[in-house]
Length: 462
Image (cartoon, rainbow, N blue to C red; front, top):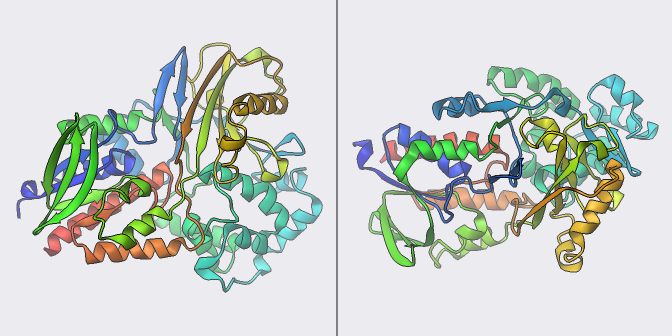
């Protein structure tokens, strides 16, 4: 069968949809991408204002797979790709209103005041802790508390989960949210043993652990990547297209959408949906009630991104790291801060420092109901106290994501199993996006190749 005669329609021009479209297009398939916005990138949104470079979505990515370098080279972005300053290796955690560097060596761990002596001793007991019988239905909190102790949960994992998922470790499934962590226990019997033995496996697979992978971005921000991919796809992407329905039509699929207030349709042999689960719930056939129920049960908490610029001389502490995360026990109104202009160059004008703060998430979505009118002012006040800043910001921008990051909650395995079953029962429909297989940029790019291979396998079997 001539690949060019197989029509593939992809819903969504975020990084998952674009990367998959790129692999398929390069292989000779007829690909059409329908995107509701007027630009590519999904949550990868970069803006340039008053000498500041603002990433409202992902601020960076981890180079965990060679596929990242492969796609960057293929779209001509090699000279634009940049890596984080060495200072970004230092991460801070707030405890008792003071910032403590997260220890990255045994010596630093012994010296740190982030953890008490009791917590340090408890950590040394990890190799002697047995496996849990809870399996798939174990929260991140339960897993970490059992293996590493309560204090490590409170002052390392709780803020880390807030930084990655804007999530609450009490509600996230360790198997679904952190599958590699879960696998260390399942395969090797413990975390420390697994980290040592698992390094050999990663080397064989040419993978980097997230602890050692390099942090990357682009000179003009993260949206450069989807824009470059879109440039290669050209008119294969149709913008401002609001998909209303996907329906089976004989042996093909009919996609109904609106463009410029006009109803249109496209007929495809294969449908790949990469839009968020809550959007997919409104697109697929009403008869697919189970699918829609699974989509609707995936929780996307609200997150506000607050971008602040200050004069450097007013910042009373060294900007010598990536930023800091805040444990829930510290009772602050925001989750943490990225020191944007420290990590990458060109993020702020001379003599100015730029910071990206995150508010809300699954930890405190109620803030937007209870304190919304005064919330930004209160967050800025807390931030200035922590950073010892003695003046007001010279630049403030904010963006609200009403539904930000999918939460891989307890029981998420049931969603995963159902999506696999749905695809098996509905040949030609594929479901992808950051609600499957990981939320990071690296995860989405890695999964895009897996999705491309699944589509090729399906075609070959036909």
